[in-house]
Image (cartoon, helix red, strand yellow):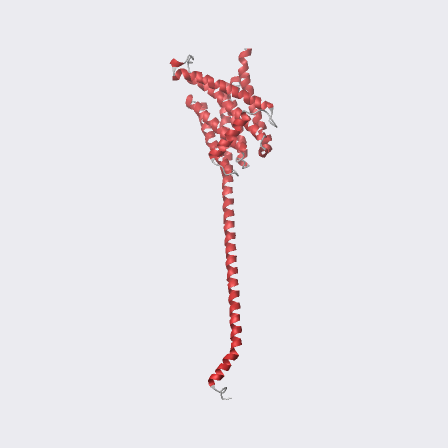
Length: 326
């Protein structure tokens, strides 16, 4: 009893009594710490999730803005296509006013008339944001080729002093500008990521295969007959141009007779060659479109182009046949 009455013994007894409560208190502290860690982890997770959502939303907004800008660039081209088409119609009106309604004049205006029709078709495609389709990429490429040859004809026989010659130059240069813009706008809007050279090479390969293939499927025999006729006539025109150029390059090495006006002779053949280029290109595009499932829906819109191609071919055939009857 004396031992338990000692102050040190009483402190030991009190510590022994407090030991369970200390253990419980430390356990509570550990549980609180674990709950705090869980709250911190959940908070960090929610913050990360929120950040990822914000990044995805920002990326989606950027993609939407980029797509809207691409679509806007297509729709901006709509009035440009139509304006250049009106320039070609003005060119046709001047030709009819100057020469009257003759077979020769009707034959000459066939090229500008087809160009005006193709530009109107491209304006509708730009308005509906369809310039990325292969059909309209082909048509833009065809217009680039047509406009380049037209400017070459202007350089060969410059007539900028006359209203018709000036309008011919303005319409050709404007067509080149808007066709190049439309071609690149279509490439940017395309779903497949391809470069300019890859897509252009692909389209050229398709055009060459179409030109050298036989009628099959939904492609009509009339389209291929027109295409072959155009090819034969273009070869004949190139041979005629070669006969004019050779005496100018090396008179001693050729027996070809130099015409009185070489520039005029070349210009007449080049003018018909340009029209045949538009005619053949539109036929190739129509055949390629009818074989492409994605573009079958646009077949009805090409009815005016087929009509214009028939007009151009008919006037040329009439000009070729006149010497046989008169």
